[in-house]
Length: 113
Image (cartoon, rainbow, N blue to C red):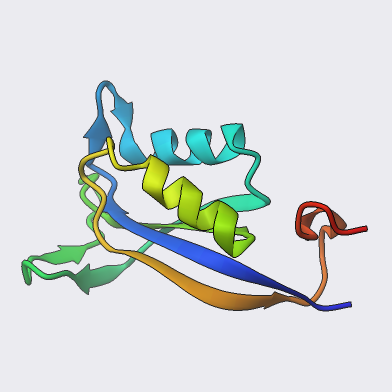
């Protein structure tokens, strides 16, 4: 059975840090602590943002663009995004509808039977 959920996308760079920890690790750790349904970090091969600075995958560099994807209910994702206000180095954050068609059944929204 299909379940309507939301997908939060957080854009950042691999070189971004939060204190002494990689920013993407901090965000995913917080997502786990918040018991989000799931999170994945994706590497981008090529792209640019509002600064028009091009990010390209280089063999010896760690300045690749990353996208953190988190799936859960809209209200939980909005609360989670707001909780990241203290984390600097995050780029664009987007929220979009997704339909979960299968896979891990624990992706069902909180409270669903």
